[in-house]
Image 1 (tube, rainbow, N blue to C red):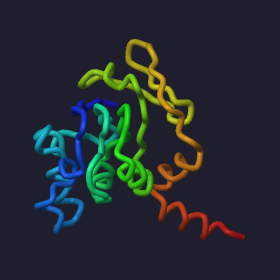
Image 2 (image 1 turned 180 degrees about the vertical axis):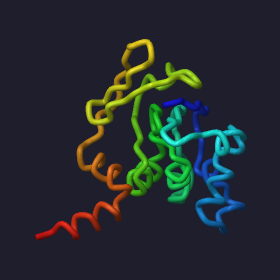
Image 3 (image 1 turned 90 degrees about the vertical axis):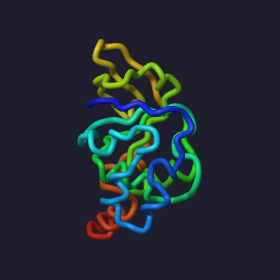
Length: 159
């Protein structure tokens, strides 16, 4: 997984810019982070990780801010803290967020692996960074692709 770095205080308008909100996710995604990383939307690959400074996702409650990252194939966002509404929206659309106080130690382009349930990030040199473990019910939500797919799956498997 390749890491992409963005600064602190990236808001939802930078993730899903207001002028393109009238379009579908595919168009909105092409403009994701263009104000801070113009090359991001075209260069990010499925499985890449976004590493941010504190307060990632602050701002409005627009669900598209998290959904575009899923659309682009981002495997996870790693940051010391998140906007509260963004945090909830992210898991609702199946985006994994790892809260890591030491996110600033992860370099641009660095290859990492993570175990979200254990709260551990392993760097290419073998060193580890601790993050907050993700509860099983949130991991289930991410694995299902979000809250609605999880609920649908549960209803279909109900005896």
